[in-house]
Length: 516
Image 1: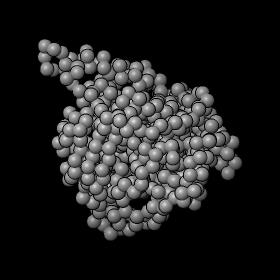
Image 2 (image 1 turned 180 degrees about the vertical axis):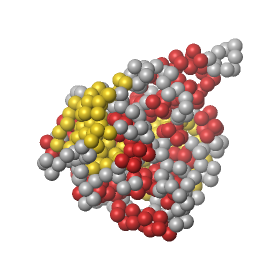
Image 3 (image 1 turned 45 degrees about the vertical axis):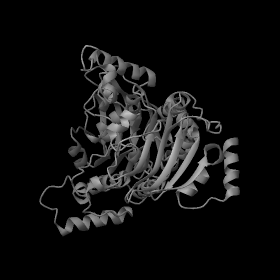
Image 4 (image 1 turned 90 degrees about the horizontal axis):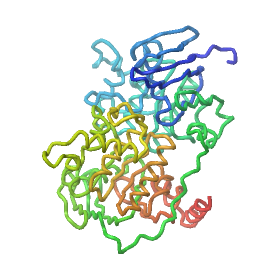
């Protein structure tokens, strides 16, 4: 192994865009067979550009790509696949109106869709990874976690020697992450595949990878074996400074005299959500803990009027609101959805257009009902300043932003409206530790301003950092409620997973968590 030629080598790879932006500055990288190579960096560090170059979506400006010992050039994802490189992108590029089977073998030519042999190949792939899906299910009917598995099967179906996984666990629940971990270990250790694993979860990077390369400002600032690193050292290299963990908030009892900004009564949805009632007061952050499929997102969608089958009442400021998203926005509700590109942003719009969409009346001139573009751009620039969005101007398309900065735009568009209640569905999914801290601090700031916030997160540590009160959901039901300062990550994991936490051990875990 020591003398084996690396499967992939990048030598001094650079990328400068026509607008003068330099995304990569002489990056060196070596990936060997049978290894998991972590690729890390803050949003905007150059990871996405490097991945696009590896996948054939972008050409490098300079440097050299060496594949199996020979310098190569390729200019399309198909050419990369044919060569033996498959990429699983963060925003999964599947065809929602096609079946699982059709998506897995999307690149195959010929009339094979009713072929028994192709179904056998699909069964073999499922057997290899130990995860089974209905091949005839439409992709648009699948959960995000299931779609991620389709993308993994699709990559394996190409027979690739190198698989690039861009944030494969960002939107997955804990049990689905374990499936991905098992697949990654199997592919590297048993099938001798090389894996480039991109993640913002430092614990999984330490547990899964053999070597880590960290990018910052387009340069590789650290390349080392994982066994020589710890999470603190990795975090420091990512952001260029020592990171102090966001401390758990010191929660005071909710002021019972504060105004009830949101009240839901017997809100339910057939086969999705059992009746739930809840009051949220001004200045309160309510965290929703639960595993994927527990009903967390369904609850937020029902509150926001996005579920046409929902029944029950939703009141804002004591007023019953209509069952539509338009009525919800008028009443003062703002939803930041889990899938920011598909549901939270208009990809073909610039920052300023996305920022002003919910409140065009605020950027319209007095003489006309039409929006004033100067005012819209000013608001976009204000959003950049207020949320520290890394963008040179508000004219940049949101598709050109890193994940964390795109998420900030999704949140920013509600900050200039008269939003009383913020519904945040996985607001920190797939973003780096710095942007994650910015957003959690923003959640605290919104509560301090007298807003009400309901936040869904798969990261129970984040819920504990900001929440006054925490609801635990499972199978579409609210099965427990805890004060934020009286519970622990340990207890929340047990409750969400269907187990009953021992009161004494839960209390001890909570005390220990507060001490640490």
